[in-house]
Length: 129
Image (cartoon, rainbow, N blue to C red):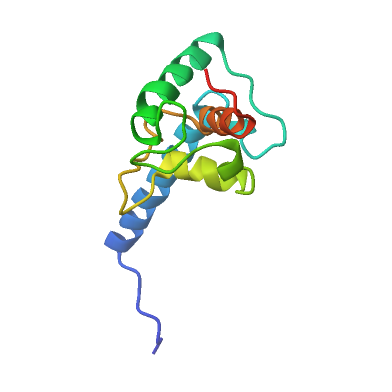
């Protein structure tokens, strides 16, 4: 007699659905413009339309909590001095996933990882649109 419980066909179907959903999520993330370039050292090239949209989002949406000059408000300051020592990937994750338990929402429905990286790179350099 085996000590491992047998896998039912329902369990196998459930596992197959979870695997398919994970594969679709990964494929969707990689299909967004510039998504593959995030882990690399070279920032992804963004189109003029993407830069215009992200610049507006940075000032209007980020600025509504972090201040129009990113010096703080409801959210913390996003100045070069406050961001410089933080890992780039961690900052990108914060933009994309938000901060649970805080007003910081996840922006991954609206931004690709490359677009979040563009925001971080410009904030660290102090280059506001």
